[in-house]
Image (cartoon, rainbow, N blue to C red):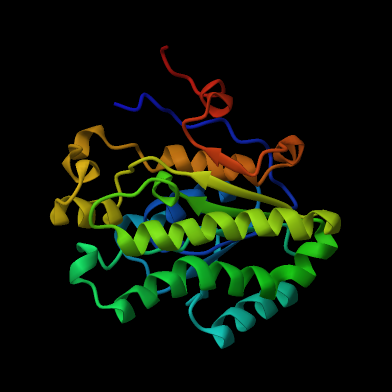
Length: 256
């Protein structure tokens, strides 16, 4: 359906990179790619990874990291400063889609957690990392989605909170560019992850009907996010990107 393949990732030696939501899915695959390409990777995990995810995190330094907690965030940044002395890239990959339900059935208070992770969590961690990112003239990569700009049945919490992350990234680009910090919001197509399994189970919109066999391999968005951590990405002026952009597809080994 999507006809996508991983992009080649440049050498990332001497780069210190923090990935949130690294305990599973795209985040875990991203960590593996970054480590293989020479980066010093800090894998922020909410809970202990198991199975394949644990294997994917080999070579990375795991940090307990709940982006909803300020003390947790500050402790992670302090550990990075002590252990690496620098932070070149922050990848805000942690995100949640719950609750999935029609908006008329949602209590307003249930929207709070999606915003706490998908918006406030991105701001909380980025703000805590700013002193290190200013020193390195670093990069912030925020995991995005087409749902940030397209309403989808049953996804009030996700669409609205990701729209917030979309605008937050644009604010980063506006206000942090003078510090030499690059900011990207990378749209990710429907991918074969645990989140997508929840979407299929809910069955509320066309995305839930995509057969698992036709979903994107998590290595694909992970490779694009890894590329955005590279020096080559510094030449990209656009803030809002998508894995399906021709810019990335031209790097992929796919049949047109």
